[in-house]
Image (tube, rainbow, N blue to C red):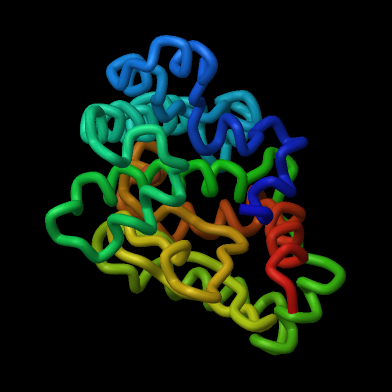
Length: 241
Ligand SMILES: [Fe+2]
């Protein structure tokens, strides 16, 4: 997926982001399906910054649990779920699209989508984030919302209205930007023609250690101090017009 590759210089290449399938030559040499399964494992992508780099907006403790336990947990679970199946070794996005909307594959979809969503979330944040978008993205934001402030307000409102766990996204569709929210592990990645630009995780595990029930304060801190508009702009540029 090109919009992800665009940010590979931030320490999260497609190779590490999707899956690490090392040793293809060894597999070919062995001809062993079991060896292929053993080698084909989804990996937890590296954080693009130190765990304490988002503090105080998001503490090192929150990042530690969120990344080290939750994000890692989805990776571990998915590897167990796909082991020995036709999905083993497939690119993560292919697994997500192949299982979306299929009740009998819900566990695979949920874990795969949560890996992707979280990786996208970490990249949607930056230690020196906040501020406003610029250039073509700012123009698109103004066209859609009237102003950046109105866009930020729409993101905040969507975050608060998302009942229970989920995600808030800025996405592009046919050159237009808009705010959408998704419940649980759902992701705009599965919607044809919709390109995610940035996301905010509004699962309680994303903010409860720092903000308890005050989701609005968490979202405010993210928008004002940590949202990575440069990442969103890269994705917008790749989305086409
Ligand atoms: Fe999360």
